[in-house]
Image 1: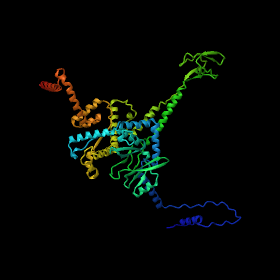
Image 2: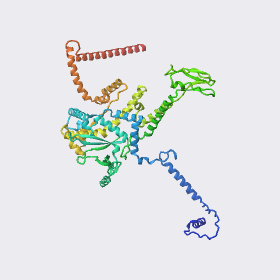
Image 3: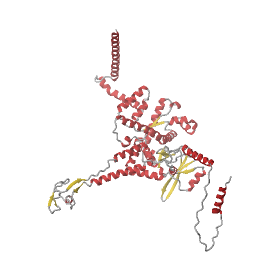
Image 4: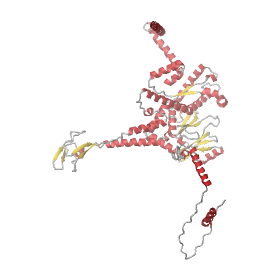
Amino acid sequence: METQIDRSMSSHLSNLYGSKKPVPIPKKTRLEPQPEPTVPQQQHSAADLAKQTIFQLYTSNLFNSLFSGEKFPGGYGGASPYYEFIDYWELRAKSVELFTKNLYAAGLINRLVTNIINTGLSLEATPVSSLLPIDDDEANDWSENTENLYRIWGNNKDLVDWKRQNTEGELQAVAKRTAYLSGDCLIVIRQSPVTGLPITELIDGRHVQDPVQGNHKKAAEKRGNEIKHGVEIDKNGRHIAFYINKIEGTKVISKRVPANGPKSGRKIAWLLYGSKRLLDDIRGIPLLGLIAQSLNEIDRYRDSEQRAAVVNSMLAMFVKKGSNKPGTLPLKGGAVRRDNVDVTDSDGTTREFAIDKWIPGMTIDELAQDEEPVSFDTKRPSQGFHVFEEAIISAVAWANEIPPEVLKLAFTSNFSSSRQANSEFKLFLDKERSIFSSNYSKPRYENWLISMVLSGRIKADGLLESWRDPRKFEIFGAWTDSDWSGAIKPHVDPLKETNAYKLKDEQGYSTKARSTRELTGMKYSRNVKQLKKENQQLAEAHQPLIDAGLMKNPSQQAAETDQKALLTEMLGDIVKNLVTETIEEMEITADG
């Protein structure tokens, strides 16, 4: 219901703002300033106040029930939408600059590549014989033959690298380093016209860009796809093709590289990422992106401390005057001449300052009264620099899942701490090698194996049929199954580690094949074959000494050793029984 106050308010506001025509002002009329109209305050009823209070309580409870990361209003602040607008170009440029100029960044990248890749991950073919028409012995022979062929092929730069510059192991290191610095690296598998085998081209992720020619975008739209950051994706988010921009003469040419072969459907191009990414990310972020500012500032701090220490070290000493009088400059002459210096004091007295026989050192003698040599206290580098540097390096190591001892190559703790650091780093290496092999080594191995089977150099019944038929995935997976091992980090105490693995093998907690791979990075079956040959050669070399009676037969010596061990065990049991009987007799006597 409208009240009298409401009607008065409406009439008053209508008079002030409702008129569309201006009010005419009489001529020669002096305009006096009018007081501002006052709006009478509306009187709220008890019901209105109750409604307002309830609304305030509701909105307050609604705010408190929404969790946005803040423990109290304003504790975190508004979230920045920066992630939706990642500047990949700026991140790549800063990452490469840091790797080139910043010793901390170079150390981090080199340490990771060296430990993960080293000289390259080695193939261990592990066909699943239970799913294939071969037995275990045939599977072992097939594995050894395949590994030998792959290793020989990988050591030939002309066969594995499109640019003919790197071997298989070196290509792995280049791909990993490029992915770290640029966020990702494009792997392109081409077919060699000479051998018919795959040959790999590595393309820096910074060359993968949106095409400059508009016809590429129109063609992608006709296919129902879109191009984002140089990658053509379909409506399901799958990578369909990649666009490479290269400068040819004065023009920028965009080239489309399909992800799969148009006829075979074989995977021929994909992005190798250098760091973790979110589900919807198309491109990778450089590893140094998160820590770029920290690394840049700590490097500046180090340079500043170093420069200050050098500059301040040049100020060796000065002469302090205890009274207000002209200085005698006792060191000035000696700094430029290799002879004695005559110094005149403030009272006119002349004295000799001997220098020439004291170079490179010198003695200051006969200073005037109230003069004394004082060492320049530089206090540089700062005492807190080392602590601050340790804190930054520890944070960088933590962010990248690396023990600080490993990153700094400084193992100053006790055995237990060093062993724990190596164990933690081993978990990291196993994970990183597994990710790298799944996204780089295994796809390339599958392409190589298919080509070798097509050429008839390797026999694998059912491989080609299962490759073309996804319903036979188990056959294809059984033939292409593989493990990839890298360099083994030396153990802190090799004897303890070896005994621990020996005990696990004896108790069935592990296998000799697995223990051999983890301890030495070698293959147990290959070791056994090699040992068989070596033992035969050793036996043939010892036979003349055995025939001459200068050496015991190893089998006889082993039998004697076993007999001694049996006698020792029997003697131990006898002594144990005697001790037990003696204790029992003593207890019976004590009870009696």
